[in-house]
Structures are given as C-alpha cells and as structure tokens.
Amino acid sequence: MSELTPAPDAEILLAQPRGFCAGVDRAIEIVERALQRFGAPIYVRHEIVHNAYVVADLRRKGAVFVQELDEVPAGATVIFSAHGVSRGVRAEAQARGLNVFDATCPLVTKVHVEVAKMRAEGCEIVMIGHRGHPEVEGTMGQADGGMLLVESPADVETLQVADPTRLAYVTQTTLSVDETDEIVAALKARFPAIREPKKQDICYATQNRQDAVKFMAPQVDVVIVVGSPNSSNSNRLRELAERLGVPSYMVDAPEQVRPEWIAGKRRIGLTAGASAPEALAQSIVDRLRALGARHVRPLEGIEENMSFPLPKGLQASAA
Image 1 (cartoon, rainbow, N blue to C red):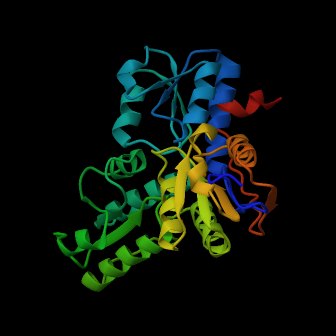
Image 2: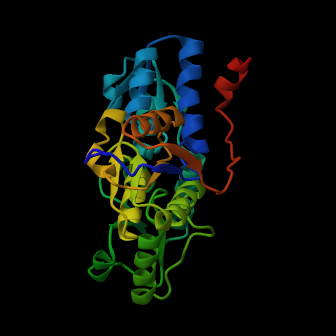
C-alpha cells in the first residue's frame, strides 16, 4: 500500500440528500429555457447559482454573466439570479425596458415579503447573514433603511436599535442552522420583544443537507464537500463537519482532490452543496475510486420532492 492510498477496504459514503435543491433546479432551467426561446445571448445578473461548473456550462450555451445591469444592452433579456435582487435593481431594469425573468428562489422571495410586511408595520429589522453575499444585499434592498446586519453573537452585543419594542429579525436562507440558533438566542436575550418570522427562513434544503452531514460525520474519517468557494451553503457543510471533529475539504473539480486527504482512511464521506450538480459529485467519486477507494455506499436520508413553478413566460416553451 502506497503512503498516499486509502485503506485497502476503503469505501465512499454518500450523504443523502446532497446536491441540487428545487430553487437551484428552477434557476438553471429558467436560463436554459430562455436560451431555447430567445436564443443567445441571454444576460444573467451575477452567477445564477454559486457553482463554477454550472456557470461554465451555461456560458458555453450562450449565457452572459454580468455584475450590473448597465452591462446589459437596451431591450435585451436579463435573468435575476437565485439569490434575489433589491427593489432598486428591479426599478432600473424596468426603467431600461429590459425583458426580465426572475430566478429568485421562492424561499428567498418569502423573506423579501416578510421584510416588506415588517417594515410596513413599523418594525426595524435585524438581518442575520453574511456581509457582501448577494442574497443579503437583495434582502436588505427590500427596504429604504430600517435594517441592520449581524453576523455573530458578538455583533448583537453592540447593536444600536431605535426601539427595542418594535424590532424583528429575518435570516439569510443558507446559514448554519446551529450558528443561527446562537445568534437568535443572543437577540432574544438582549431584545426580549423581538419578533421572529412565522416560519424559519433557513431553507429546507440547507437544513436537510446539514442534518445529513451530522448523520454522516460520526461514520467517516474524512469529509469531502462538493461546492464552489463562494457557495454559502457548501461552506457551511464543510465547517459543520469540521465542528463535528472530522477533517473536511471542499472541491469543485475532481483534480482538486489530494491523495494525502484520504491516505490510510477507511471511510470517506461525500456530500454536495445545494448548487453543486450530481454529475460533478459523481466525477469526484470517480477520482476517489481512481485514488484507491473500492466501494460506494449511499447513506439513508430524506428523499426531497419539492419543485417550484417556472415564470409564466417560459412555461409555454416546455413542450
């Protein structure tokens, strides 16, 4: 046995569920349907989902990814990414006469609706999320002021609010469930009257994939997460496995898997973030097998069957 090969009977344990969620499936299908219906180029504001493999594939098919709307020619078709956009971006698109299809995940839209309702009722809103993430920018852009961002329990301690009795909170949908619970507990301890969302904002897919890692981690010697560096939910999976005491690595291409990560290991755990396609996960499995892993064993877990409807202007092209 080479020093860099896994144990002779090494097996790969596949987390269930892993990979694409309904919101990501829908967003990618919106771009593909728009390309079929209108032809290339189709412009997409920001990466449609945070995965390099997906973005490269859509780029090859004729999608053009831009950072801002001023890069989109007048009258062109533009798609808003799954992460959502601010009201200002929507207004700019309308003013410029762009043909818009909105791929915002419906679970992100739910948070946008909550923000509008809470602001209309006179509440100041604390958003729990990661500064600079497009979902956070889009959600905070649903209100003209009156929103505060916190990233940790320490941020809660220094928070200055206008009126503690008229305060509410929302969260980014792709956060660590456990870390978010800590921040919520800190908010409730400091502001007992704070209002919470009717239903938690962290999406079902984020919760399910984190639960699957919690189930898998005690059974493996190392965890490999398939996901891109800018994917929030993929990063949370890697961090969660690390917190559970298992060495963890994140890759978004098979050649990134290093032999020393699995050297001497008997059980190799594999999961994939909600924006990582199964084809990419399987290419990582192939790489692990080439490095010496002998068997693949899917773990038990939740079977997801959620789906979201496409925008009206793209449904007709389904046939």
